[in-house]
Length: 313
Image (cartoon, rainbow, N blue to C red; front, side, top):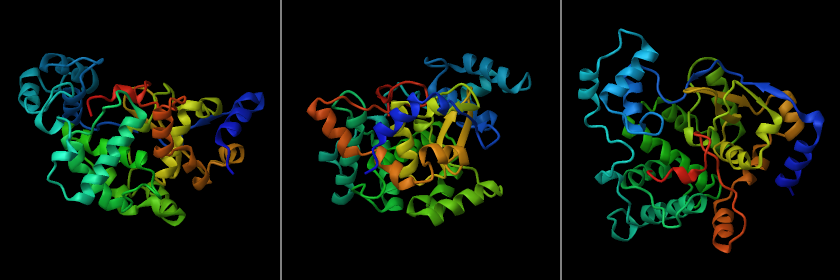
């Protein structure tokens, strides 16, 4: 049986394995691509962890887009209906499955996603938002795997979270639509077709920022990849059938990918064996460990902190 933890330990402890990989792609924005999308992003997420008003956003936009960028008055008009993630709005209030009018089969699926959220973050009472519950129906229909038997529910939760965040900040979801269309989670043939579509310029790879840790460079070392707290991120990438072993952020919005077929990487860790790496993530095991008091394998998120910071979504 694939013993992930033992394999990671053996690889990390071997000095010959200090290998540096460069991402296969040119850096591209991971959160937004235009001035308008940047404005929406800062309105939704704030700047430096704090709510950003129109004046502060305008200053930031000038830094990124030059003196011809929109002024604070125009920005004020554009952001007045965008809720800051720290504000309680109706759709961002906790979802209550007991009093939901959703169909029973969808209601039980959303409840399981709540268990996933509780498994990987604190407090134990963490719930989905009403907005996330709405997006859960689309995700359930696309994966057609409401119990996470083929695509672990922790991976499905990542997609629900991303759709919810994109809606809140008004960001496009073209990359997510392409991901659903190519359905790489169904097997190697779909994964390979999805890879070819990206390499030939027909699509952009999907961006799931919840599983893209902040590395600070376009390069990543094998020892960084094999950090214990990254194992779950790699496992989610595998569960989603993604052709890249891991995605990460360099600086700001730059998103990078490392293809799982990279020869030296595949030789060292068997990165092409998606089925093996799927075993690195198991929502049932996470929840059992948490409830039993065992040491918890928390997922590191894109802001280089634990998922515990995701209390607003």
